[in-house]
Image (tube, rainbow, N blue to C red; front, side, top):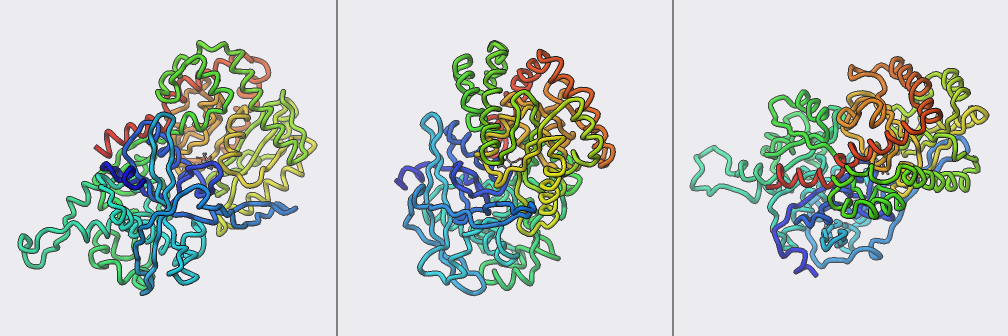
Length: 562
Ligand SMILES: *Cc1c(COP(=O)(O)O)cnc(C)c1O
C-alpha cells in the first residue's frame, strides 16, 4: 500500500485543517473546507499530491444551543480506524524537553476518475506518550497558546519527519496558512552548503534551496490574525528542536511570527483573491505576492438533483467546469423545479427539527458561516423597524447558522443575540438559527436558499467561499464587495452588491442592504420571475465556471508547483 503512495514525487500539502469527508469533523470553517475541496480537485485531476494534517480525534467541537441561545461545546468524536489505516512509521518531536512520538494514519481520498490522494493524519495518541501528550492531536484549535504551539510543531516538524520516514520524494511544500511554517526549520537543517564552501562567520543553511521548495498561501487580511508566539514560550517548548538564531532571522526578533517565517522561506506566496493579495502587499511591503482566487469543488457542492441535470445536458461538466457556460441549453423551468426541490429539502429539515413552518413560496435568505464579529451577522438586524417594514411589503424568511470559537466571547454573544431576535420577531419574520453548522448542513442551506447573504466588514473577508457554493447552485448572492465577490459580482446579472468598495461603515452598509432588498431583490423575486431565472442561469454560467477548485488547482500547479 505504501509502495503505491510514495512511488512518485509529490507536492506535500500541509494544512492544520482539511475537511475531506462529510462525516469527519477535522475542520473549523472555510480554511478546512477549501483544503478539502483542493484535495478533491487534486484527486479528480490526478495530481501528484500528498496531504498532511492532524488527526483531530475530537474534531473542532460540536455546537448546541441552550434555551437562551448560549453555545455549548462538546467533543465531536470520530473513530479514525473506521476510515483510515494505521501506518507503521513513528517519528519523534521534542516538546518541553520530552520526547513526543507521532504516528500516522492513511486516508485515501478517491477522485471521480482513477485519482487518489493520500492524506496523512498525524496522531500522538500512542502508548509511548504521557497522557497530556496523547491529547495533543485531539482538539482542533483547542486549548491554550502552548497547546497550539505544540500542535503546530507536530504538524510542521512532525509532518515533515513523517514524510521522510515514509520515504516520500517531495518536490514542493505547500503551506496552506501559516500553521505548518515550522516545517521550514526542518528544511533549513537538512539543506546545507558544504562547510568547506562557506566563509567563516557565514551561515551554512541553503536558503535559496529551501525557498525554491516552498509555497505559502496566506488567508488572513488582519495583522492581528497571524499566529505569533513569544520567544519565551518558544524556548520553553521547542528549545531542543529549533536553532533560534536562525529562526529569528526569518520569523522576527520580537516574537515568532509564523506568517513571516513562511513568507521569508517561500519563493511563491499568494493571497486567495485579487483584493486579498492587494491587502497583503500593503501589509507586507517588499514581498512578491500573487493572487490565486479560491474556488469550490463542483461535484461536492452542486446539489445532487442539479448535478444530475448537468450530467444529462452537459456531460463532463464536473471535470471541465467550463462546460457550464452552456447551462442555458437546459430549460429554465427544469432548473427552477430542481431548485424548488432543494428548497423543499431544506424546509423539511427545518420544520422537522425546529418546528418553524417555512413556506416554499416565500424567498429564503441564507446566512451561515463562522460566527465572528467581522462577518457582521447582525448587520441585517441593525434597524428592526425597517426590516419589519420591508418584510410586511415583501415577505421573506431567514436561515442562520455558524459556530463561534470557544474563546470568542463576542461571537458567542452574537449567537445569543440572533437567537433572541428570532423569538422577538417570530410574528413578523420567520428566522431559524440552525445548530452545529457543518458541511452537510452547508450543502443543504446553500442549495436551498434563494438569496445568499454576506455582510463582512471590508477588507477582512480574504475570499469567502460559501457564496461560490451558492452561485454554482444558481442561488443569487447579495453581498458586500469584499473578497471573491469583487471579482464575481455583475450587478443585476450574477447577484447584487451591498454598499460600495470604499471602507465599510455599518450604517451605510445597512441602509444599502435594506434598499437593495426592498427595491430590487425582493420585487424581482415576486414580480419578475423570468428575470430571476435568467440571473440564476447567469450566476452558474459566469461564476460556476470560474470560482471552482479545478481552476484553482490548475493554477497552483502551473504557477506555484512547476
Ligand atoms: C464553505 C463553508 C465555510 C466558509 O464559508 P464563508 O462564506 O467563506 O465564510 C464555513 N463552514 C462550512 C461548513 C462551509 O461549508
